[in-house]
Length: 315
Image (cartoon, rainbow, N blue to C red; front, side, top):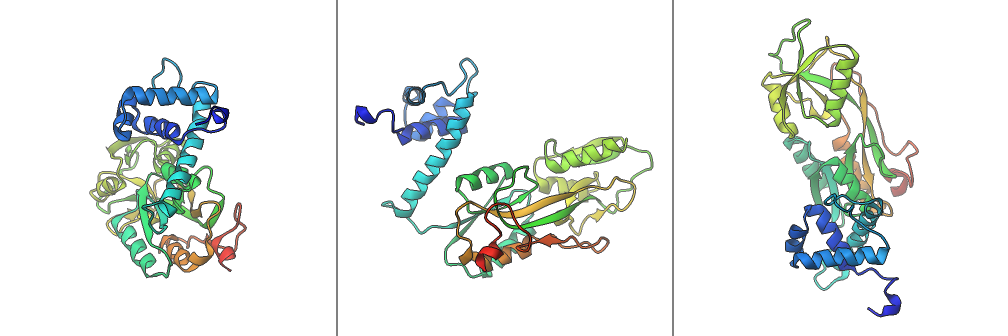
């Protein structure tokens, strides 16, 4: 690099080193991933700090990022995403651009099969790839442009481009063979930190109802199996009310509704995908329960945030 440009250009390998160190939580693992030595990775991070005029990691606190480091990481991910997309699109080993769709990891086998079948039947001019992941990662990658469309539930700061949004009621569910005794602690199937778990705990505490944790697991499928086996009750959206379990009609506090939606990355042309997105929306829209009033959803006819809904764009 010419010296006169030293302060104007950040070598892409420095940004990749930072992102890899953060993702692997180790300088050594980052070196292995990038096929470099650990001193080389350290030198790249030091060079990046020098170019930016400040430290990236808090001294003496391992891999804790400084405020500057958090900002640098955000921009580094975006620049790397564009770099990698450019190579994948027009590079020497480029391949046709795929439509990348993100789905939450809690979706069941049956739900996923329905999504795949319906979306495969919808006309689309490019290959489609699906990915299941945590909602936080889907939001981040949608904002970075790593995925094009994502189905997200109850995110605090939804993406700006809304394809469709639904208001989905939460329900208490249990096995038909589980009898809830009056005054007895409520056996709760949960995983601490998840949004449904927070809703369940807050609702019970606000009503002064005692509860005990009867089963915990990070996988939704495992928690649903525990409910079906009669180990306890669980708060779930309508999408997860399976035939093996039933909605608790009485004795527990009413749960609120959550907002779910299909969102797109900014700048993505949705118009050619209107049939595909309609099929995806029809599959993911929550069906009504026989015992409850139908849950209405909005698609296209409600002014969305940002650039509008796909139906308005697709015309």
